[in-house]
Length: 319
Image 1 (tube, rainbow, N blue to C red):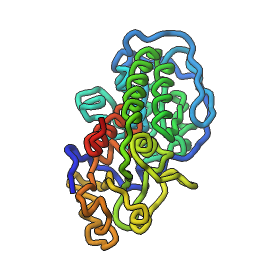
Image 2 (image 1 turned 30 degrees about the vertical axis):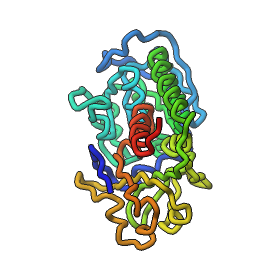
Image 3 (image 1 turned 120 degrees about the vertical axis):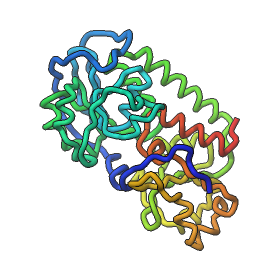
């Protein structure tokens, strides 16, 4: 069993993953706002019109400078283009690999999909980015302050496309393209010599386990660089029993343990008493790798997926 270098506390599995379904919404130009918390550099100007992942057109009179992030992929993408959000929901945003703890941002409180809209409004955003299927119901209230863009990334390529879209929305397309191209080239280079080992990215707790299928950013990335026989079926984040994992018997398991505390017990330890789990090749050969659940589960963007790839390359000894 191997423990992560920097474990981060999370809520329950259901709260983290409930929002990867499709949603719907409307658009509305944002009102005038004060100066951004962090200037977006050499940003372009002029009207912006994009379509979000629910098919809704979002129109802005000018590129957005003050963005409130209700989902971590928003923070991830803004970090790539050098912009600090004016509001954040996920504690992972405060990690130094993203915005950092010293950033001037307002925390958005409330449950997942039931965020406190007042926190959003007080941040005076000119754009809000949320997760399709989870935060759709906030649209009417949020759009009294600013347009709501809903993202639904189902693959690492979707995450790259979202980064480019954020570049369009913020007038930083050149910076977005640079980061997107660099990440794509990295994935393609590793994928040119993939491992023949069978891998699995799983999360949860005993009795409530899930798998990152090939229709998730993390699962699709693993499918590029290893043997990853985990199709989506009807649900890209399907529940799985230990017996189903044993039927495939992966060589390497990347395990995400969820807990509300900082001292999360590794998932492999929590499953150790299960005789079926104990017979897995990965368990017997000490190849169940405990990874940062926050990064793997909620990050979704190119920075987060780069960290996922770091762990995968190290474990699989990829070139």
